[in-house]
Image 1 (tube, helix red, strand yellow):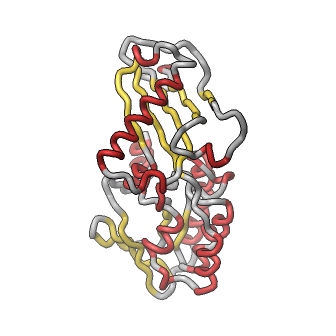
Image 2 (cartoon, rainbow, N blue to C red):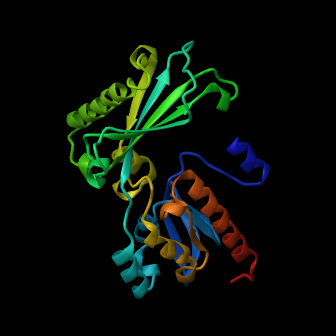
Image 3 (cartoon, rainbow, N blue to C red):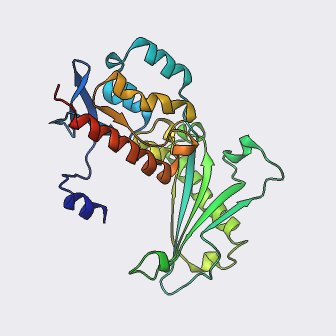
Length: 264
């Protein structure tokens, strides 16, 4: 669906394309390097991690000292998360139980416990065939807060065991709401902060980007480097897919105005 919309709009798009660098010249964007290939560009919209965009893709030399000092002092990464994906066997069905289920066994609010390796709080997203036309399958995704540092140092065997334990504990917890969950489960998989770090390049696997203080630096990139824009999760009002879409529309409008301006 997204590919068709991009093509219809006259856009070129690629998959399996790793952006390695954003090149600048004279205080403006000049090109991006994708899989070793340089592509000329007057404007670039980065949806990557804000710290990685500044320090990694562009590089400190393109920014003013005051901007970098404030950036390094104020920008904080959000926590990461873990997900357990549960596919229901073909032919089995789930009774309607809502799209979201919030569950916690912690006796009181504890900010540290929310992201601890011993999970006590989960959110279950339930996907029914009715919201995915053309399929009769049910899927459940359990989401938990997590800290990258709790997963980073695990050796391969310990990491695999921790993922397996995460899946088993989630199935046990979900059985409170769906007693037959183990009998009707067809397949499971788990994602951790290391998964997000690998596939998104976000430092610490920060799946929800940065805290709110980062927004002014995200929006301030064009004043530092002409044609450089950023969108993504920066604070609660811009978090998750909805925030990214809202911020994406704002940023796309800014990029369009920049490109419609006089050539430089």
